[in-house]
Amino acid sequence: LGIPSALSFLPMALLSAVAGAVVDRVDRRVLLLRLQLVNLVLSSLLAYAVVTRIVTPGFVQLVAVAMGTSQAFEMPCRQAFVADAVPREHLRNAVALNSAMINLALVLGPSLAGLLISTIGIAACFVFDAASFLAIIVVLWRVRLPVRAPRPPAGPMGALLLGGVRYVRRDPVTRSLLMLLAIAMVCGWGYTSLLPAFSRRTLGADGAAYGLLHASSGVGALAAALWVAGRDDRHPGRTAFGCLFLFWSALGLMALVRTLPVAMLLRAAAGFAMIAFFSTSNTTVHLRVPDELRGRVIGLRALVFGWTLPLGQYLMGVVAERWDTPTAFLAGAGAGCAACLVLAATRPFSSTRRRA
Image 1 (cartoon, rainbow, N blue to C red):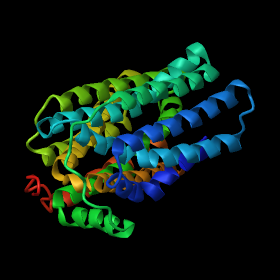
Image 2 (cartoon, helix red, strand yellow; image 1 turned 45 degrees about the vertical axis):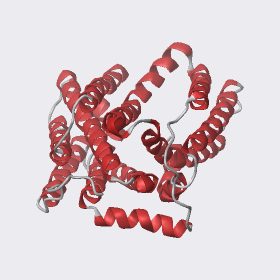
Image 3 (cartoon, rainbow, N blue to C red; image 1 turned 180 degrees about the vertical axis):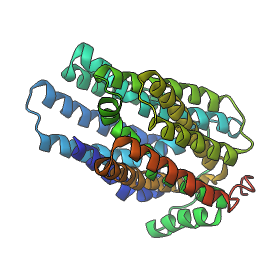
């Protein structure tokens, strides 16, 4: 089960920076439409293989690589597309809503898949997934964008990539947000991969309890999505740090509890904190970065995510195997808080005004 997941992340880790440069030099709506067609074909092939029972581990792994490659280009393109679709004065709210919904889907998706599998079966779930791409294709086909100023002429790919790296290096706020993202992925967010062991061995609960833990996180994530989208955050740095400290506090306390209701409450708090952090940091980056660099900076953000999340999952797994799951939670929370305190001492968000 871990191999397809790792293979799907591999293209993101390798191609996100290049994908961001491509996004800055092509028509984003056309690229998104073509990527959804690719996703439709891949998902349909997987559904056919499952329905006809000819699916094999090798086939699943091949599809995982192909879908991961598509996702590596789709992620920066989809997020940069928001800036093309709305007027500048509505960009903050649009980016916040888009970011909140994306991250909310990451939490609710597995829960919805589990519900569909238990009600309509595994094969029907894959068919439903393939059909869902049709709705996205229709929307992208019908959407009409406002007229924008032409993009600058495309340059060499290497120069485009370096332009994004230079911007991140010069801008302390964007650079610090990427560092916070890396800290969060390495020192905490990988705890979700240990939830089955936590539910069974620490709480002594069954599969239903594991589903309730997922559902409680979804409730917290939904609250975070509504909270972020409905506010005008004038101090995003404080919000980002505050959300991460709330997350690590909840994670550390989860290591100490042995009852399901309290674990669900803490899981909801962790889901709220992490989705609020994702949405706040993503919105801040969008509002700061110049339009001509948007795809490359988002690509670099996806690159950080693609490398650090698997690393964090591996490290927490090593700690849990050497000691136990609660110890892994405590270690992640302690390391994350310490790293954030070190970064906060540099006052990275002393100025959050967008660069000209």
